[in-house]
Structure formats: C-alpha cells, structure tokens
Length: 365
Image (cartoon, rainbow, N blue to C red; front, side, top):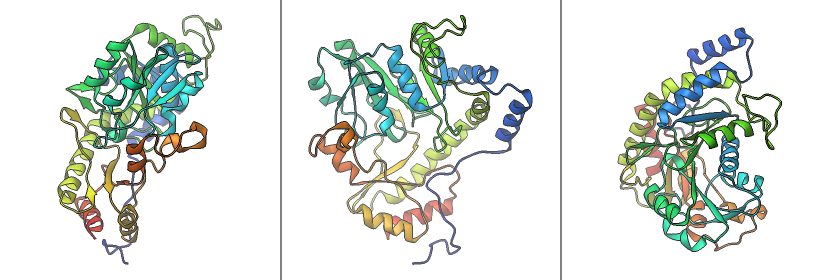
C-alpha cells in the first residue's frame, strides 16, 4: 500500500532535537581544552536541581548509573530487598543486583502502567528497604499512596524518572517526588545528551555519597583519599554542554509533546479495539512515549508500517520472563497482558499537523 503522505517520507517514532546552539556549545568546550567533568557539569547540575525543585543534583554518565548511585546512597546492601515492577526497561532492576540486593517484583496498574500500590504491602518483609517507582512513558506513579506505605514501613522511595523530565504530580516536579530521583539523558529521551544521567535529592549526605560513588569512592574535597568502593560514573563537560542547551529547550518541547498527545487522543478516542493513554488526575504526563493498548496489535502495527509510520513496543516481554530473573508465566498477569497489547506511536515535537492526521488515519484503517 502506498504511503498516505503520497511522497514516500517516513514518520519516525522519535527524532532528536539538536540545533546549532548545541554545536556551538560543544565547540566552546572543545576549544577550552577542559573535556572531563568541569564547570559545565557543575552549571548543568545547578540548573537541573532548580528545575526539579531539589537542593542537589549530581550528574553521571547514564540513567543506569544514576539508579546505582541512588541505591548505594540510601544504603542498599547484600540481601536487602527492593520492590519494583517487571514492566519496565532492565536498567530499573539491574542496579539492585549490582548492589547485591534482591529484586521483589510487583505488578502494574492496568490503566497507568505504573506500580500498583495495592499489591505492595503483601510483598514487604523485614528485609525490604526501598521501592523503585517507575514513571513509565512520562507519567508519574501514585506517590501519595506510595508515601503512605513507605512511611508505615520505614522504606525509601527511589523515583525512576528516566522518562519523566518535567512531569508533575500534585503540582510537584518529577525528581522531587520520592526520597531520591534518577534521570536519563539517552539519545531518545525528552532531554537528550546522547548518554548521561542525573540524581536529584534534598538529602546532603546522600548527595555527597553519590558524588563519591561516581568518582572511584573519593571525595572531591580530598583527592586520592578513597572512602569506599566507587565507580567511574562521571559526566563530561561535552555531555553537560549539550544538556545545558537542551534544558533551555525542554519547556517548549515538552509542551509540544503534550499538544501532540492531545491531538492523537482526540482522534483515536472512539476507535474500536484501541485504547489511548490514560492520564491520572493530578499528574502532568510528558509523553516520552504515546502508548496505545491494542486488541490486535499486529494489525495496527502493520497498517502503520504500510503507511511509512514507525512504531515501537515498550516492552515486549516483562523482566520476570527473562531467564536471568527466573520468573514464570502467570506471576504478574497485568504486565504479561500489557506486553502483548502496548504499541507506541510517534508523538515527538517535530510532528506536523499533517503527520498527526496521517498517524490517526493509519490506526483507524
């Protein structure tokens, strides 16, 4: 079938927003001769903390490193249990194992795709130390319910905000919704640096622990004094220079995503067999992904492909069904069912009104 656009052009699932400003900033760093962690990283940290409304932000080289640093800072050790969801990218879970901890999975809510608070308490033991709440696709989890549970059992909440830059819950910014927040700046994220990550917190001790952990266990104040095991998780000034410009663009790009999502939802709300994303009351969803639930996903994806529209499945198999995590069919039925239904379609800021109309028409067909 010919492309609906008639010109054979492809509508990409994601599109990196890099302009001349980023290139100029990178050249300035190159010309300065200071390429490793330096003043650009510090400036990026300060501005990102201000965005999130936290006292501290600590830059690292990936979202995975951010979660690893956060778990170290809050004191996760061997055999400690951390509760999280199986319907997420593996980088949510792996840092638990990297700290010697034990992953305890809890199923997700059918509507929001986020952790189901009603299922948490039955999984808590005397070894449980933390909950990693994932703001999947750009929508914050139910932090009011999570805080109630965490306070009752003296647990820490790690906010996996890797997909939720500038999202909000009850008027509070993502990155400041749990005890400690973790962001990714991977190439396709709403704020992209190619690679990179950030930890956000209001706890001074945890901030210092993260700084040491990213720098081989040494304090930035006492060089070559190693306080504990650490890693090379530092961000470079080259990465931070891109992040600084991206940070300036973020409000405009986020607003564009939200507008595009609204157009898609309006166009698809009455399509039989297709369910647009649900938005929880009190949240600002920033649509890192615009994810449909489809009764016949293969048919919808094939229609999009025939019309030169890219789509993606995030995620085709819950983590517990991978051999590494040693789960089995039926353990988490909602996650397993969603993995067979979810389909992400383009929502990025570069889409035109024509593009959005073509996407809606292709799904309807």
